[in-house]
Image 1 (cartoon, rainbow, N blue to C red):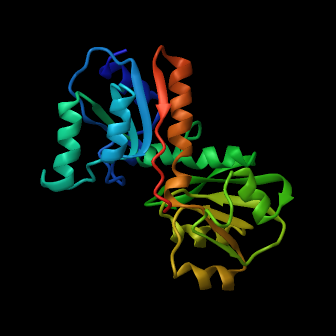
Image 2: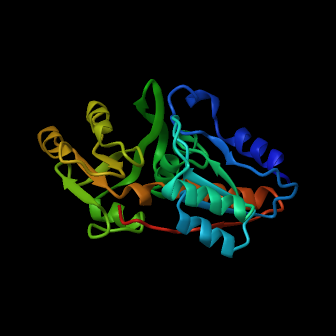
Length: 253
């Protein structure tokens, strides 16, 4: 497999076109030196220098990230941006990014990954962002408490950014939008969801949840966006003769 074939593989899975007018991320190869052969692909959440160094140590050919280096406007190649780009170029590493296409994908996306982790039934698209639904919602087979749900997600109240327990003690319906989607709580309320799961935590949502009588878990921006890269890493390894790894560089945020 070369980088052209890898790009086609990703594009056949991730719907880049549907979000091209609303996603500021430069989805696709952001750095590509035209390597003929791709043997190792490292997956991660963030395009950080720490991630790049760990990928190099693993002898990766390509790094796939959720948060890339380019976000729809020119940026000077100075300081840490220079350091990141120069590291990739000097070490012959290609960088691929997929932002909203990875959030919303119904097979290996962040939101569907969380929904499937919870074994939600009747999973539906949820969370309209500029006219496109990027999240997921569904129903638990058996009603659960917040702590039982946190346990299934392999986290807890201490590790999560915050828990607002203002809804039903027993939760049956769940809506999910990973990352920085605190304002989408209103859409969960409109659909009378018992629980809304996102990554970030914002001050303004406290009274919204309290007055609306809804539970909210802010599980961490980083944490909620590890699901997609892990699932896509596993899929690529199954589908192609390519070795993959997920590089975990948590921020605690």
